[in-house]
Length: 307
Ligand SMILES: Nc1ncnc2c1ncn2[C@@H]1O[C@H](COP(=O)(O)OP(=O)(O)O)[C@@H](O)[C@H]1O
Ligand code: SF4
Ligand SMILES: [Mg+2]
Image (tube, rainbow, N blue to C red; front, side, top):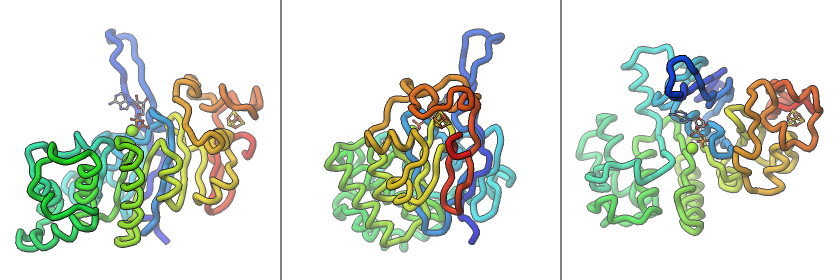
């Protein structure tokens, strides 16, 4: 079986302004990211703030250019094709960004926001009028909402609109960036339920990233744990939750709360990023970054305890 989406050795480096042309500083937001997402699979990525989750989705959307690597959709490398081909492939990706407030044009009515990808896909106006009520209903909104402007909606309703827009044109891949993190806890669980229902209804292929392990565990088939731009562990959700291998994953599951990046990150990119906090570290060995080792078809881990 071939993957729908595939990333190989994707690196992203941001140059930081230092105030001096002679002093060069940079952040590696992604450090050789590799993963595959298969048809109708939801690939979940959990990572603390700053671990590179949004960058990973933005790089697929073409908003950020990687310094190295390949990103393939249905076997086509997005970084090697011409602009027009890339644009037409990206049109088939649904994207829900981190903040619903900045995701929409405040001057557009709900019906126009949701219709955007349909128009872009060349769907005739007469068909759009028929599709819109179905979409509105699918995301749990009522038809009156169509005539409203974004400021007239609650944050939860707006997120439903953003999700309706993302699924409107039946995307080949759906990218969800922290779809619940801007919402209060009740609305968070409503949106999680909605995403589960939509998945059952449409069976989408998706990448879902969040700092919240609980949200990702409820929605994903596979789970990857990310820290400092690196995937530290990958496996089927139940396997990772029931038998976490990486010490960082173990700590995450124990606390079910991600620690702030500042507390755990090791500045030296040659060292395991979890070195400072790891209770199982092997003093000398772990000063070298371990490779991501494939333990089985469905399990990978980046830790010297398993290499
Ligand atoms: N445009 C940018 N310029 C400089 N650094 C950036 C930029 N975007 C992200 N970063 C840095 O890259 C790292 C990953 O950021 P991000 O992908 O937003 O993380 P997450 O979504 O997991 O919180 C962070 O260290 C962040 O500060
Ligand atoms: S490589 Fe070493 S420091 Fe890093 S998580 Fe594994 S045991 Fe801990
Ligand atoms: Mg983010």
